[in-house]
Length: 260
Ligand code: GLP
Image 1 (cartoon, rainbow, N blue to C red):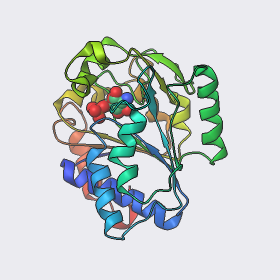
Image 2: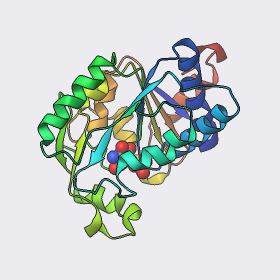
Image 3: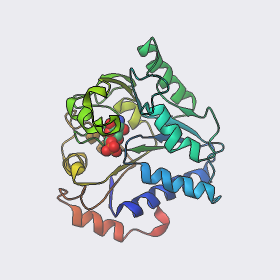
Image 4: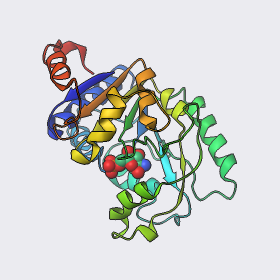
């Protein structure tokens, strides 16, 4: 696992560099998209570079990590609508090339199985963007999630619903209780995992993710088993890392050609 400690603006540029490099090498690349506030600066940078003609998503496809269950199709906080607004509408990705688990389906287990099949048919995800919850979730894989899980229905923790209440007018009662999420094994199948975390509120989760024992209690720790995982954090999110000085030294000495 590579740990990069940089200011948020540098993190966004580094992740955009990785996406740009991937698309240059493989224009039909498959991207994994995360919602939440963590990837926003990355989406802003990708939109800027797309507008400037530096990169194109015209042949790319994308898969979302997760979705709320029970929100109406036109709800502004339905993740499908969030991704359309924050990413798809701002770049040149083809209509229909962005896929997400269907939280409005009558048969949710069938929708989850269909989603797994669609990801597999696309050849899997090349680069998966991730944020991390304060309780250590990735996607919506809450503590206790099977480390071998696939896309399925989950119940959100009280902590996650409280964290996400800011998107629902501060009213935790309006945050759905259930969601569909790619499983931890689904996420681990992506060829490159790129996790972004900023702010002191993420420091404990980042400490466990990078330096804790692998445990379903901190689901993101499964990333320690991934052969190509990059964790990009600002000073505040890195503040509880025991080996922070070492990670900084490693990154400072890294040849520029290596990329993430
Ligand atoms: C949300 C999402 C995750 C996200 C995480 C952190 O609930 N389901 O995909 O990574 O929690 O969110 P944020 O980046 O807003 O802190």
